[in-house]
Length: 231
Image (cartoon, rainbow, N blue to C red; front, side):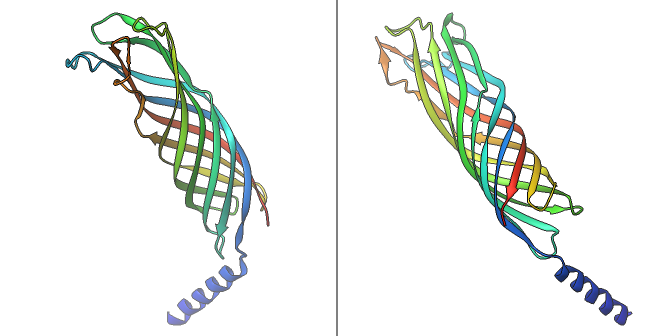
């Protein structure tokens, strides 16, 4: 029994050492769709009543595309792999709704749109065969949003616009298909959550009208990635 075990371990080591490692810098593009969700809060702190707040839940669907640069490493044995990458994405998710305080009349319209994301992520996975692997990832990102407020019935300005940034974490996973030793295709899902943005401070009065806006974003992204690894 001991002899058989020794032979098995020896053959396993030989097979492992005979399999070259994979490592290199990779560059690629990605495209897909995303759903922007979050609560937009419109308040009037001039009144102490909690009913003077309007909460609108956003669910905007749009496209998203961009590029990535990273490093891929699979140790000797070629089964387990790790990666780290930086990415940039542009998105088109946008939604418009009425602006109103609960129990009151419409005071205008507002829209929230997603613009640019910059971030970095890292992860690891395992090949189930020489061509196909599964992985998970965790990252950090910053996303820019544009806010537009029109047909306003208070103050002297009938419209306002703001650009704000939110930072947060993202996590997800995907399926990797190795077309060649240099070309990979990924199908990937990512959930990203951002910090609350105070779009407009309620301390800034317009003709005595105090109005504040805030938005807390999150995103679901489903993307296809194509990467080329150098080296």
